[in-house]
Image 1 (cartoon, rainbow, N blue to C red):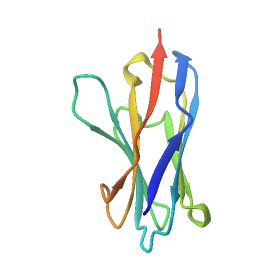
Image 2: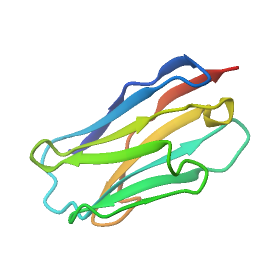
Image 3: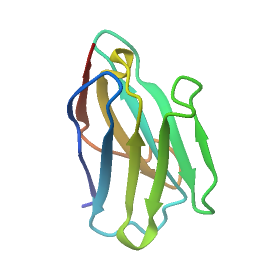
Length: 115
């Protein structure tokens, strides 16, 4: 059974950086897209970014210019480099990958940004 495992979350001061990773264990036959969402307490899950097989990327306006998504196809791993973090970036960050966004989900990793 395929599992997605995120890592790299933690506590950081505003203006700091973190790099999240999400690796798939097991065999996934078709990964067209990899992405990240986040969910803050009491809020709905929010799209952050995604990257396609061809390397095309897209970002939510709230993170554009600060976050960078990348992938290593050989390792079935997606990364999220987060710079200039703000307190409003505090959330559980969840990765997703597969034929489409939402095919598979990780369990999430907590990111907390203090002011």
